[in-house]
Length: 466
Ligand SMILES: *Cc1c(COP(=O)(O)O)cnc(C)c1O
Image (tube, rainbow, N blue to C red; front, side):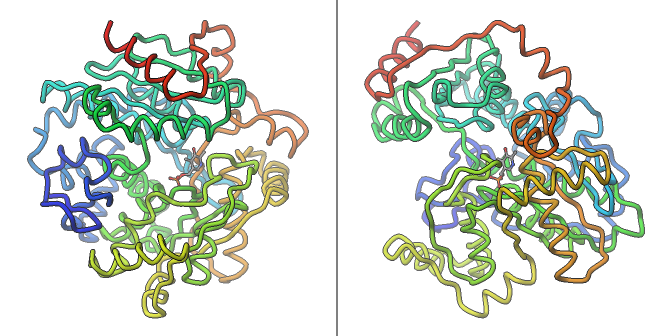
């Protein structure tokens, strides 16, 4: 399989090159040159496979000959052996909905599904190519800890994660700083999340430094992350009762458009998803786009679902490329328009096309709390605040559409990761699973450092030259 850029500025590259490149060198996002598809007979056969074999079948279509099957199988097996359930992404019946729990990985959020695999894949490719990689990123919580757990102890990789000192949740802080592997460096920045992001951006802007020290990013735009996420949509199908498989609706709590893009890809590949419901919190850029066809940024507002507090969705360009008939020229025009005016408008024809696949519901903090409370009272199931946006959106969608197709809500985090929001909703914090209670007594390691690019650069140079 060859990979191309949404902006049309690179020659086709291999899967391996696409993984190592991350962001396309022309500034675009990488995509497979053709979309693999499965017939409905093949999809029925896929439904019989356990999760890791399902992943194997789907990944093989995207990778082709770039990784020998035995090696790929090994990478997949070790990536999902760290999950607390063999099903990896179990589907549960909760009231009149289904909930797919994507939080059984090491950091209890759905990002583990992609990052456990990406860590193994990076190690495999780096060792094979005799190269090394130093990952640098700033985090406000979820991505940083999932990335650290994805690459801890891996050969040829170091990871440096900047978090705002004292400003991430206690669970997230512990999940990051209790990892004591030699290749993991936690930098607690004396500043806020934006300071951390600025420092990382300035480090990457120094191209000589970036090249000399093999710096790379952890971000949600790596193609391998999307590919890994396609699998659990197929796994929904496998776990649904046969009568419900004909067509079903999936509700996705959305920030960067990564998770929901994987769902759209699964639909393109032949999975009979009727519609995708995009749930946002008060940070509603994607909600406004789906309602009006106009994409225009707003101010980021803090909410009870912090991992969705995003106003520019980094994976959205992938979808726009397909929507614009895979025409990079047409896409570039839209992107230039957006860069100049801060607004991107699609034609009414494309708007209709988009509305066949997507609908959206915006959920404010009050509705998040009410949804956690109502769901708990009616079913005994405790939602985390991100998943609650999805469940609220599912109820709204049912009311609007008067539909009785199966509704699947993706649960993106374990409630015990966000105990304050849960306690606010139901009066008591959720019971912490063993992996969280165990954190309490673990030793931690981090280095406190000024929110200053020079200081961080000196730190990197010191660590990387020993
Ligand atoms: C990252 C994250 C999201 C948003 O996912 P996207 O792929 O950015 O849309 C939602 N919920 C949780 C808990 C997350 O960590």
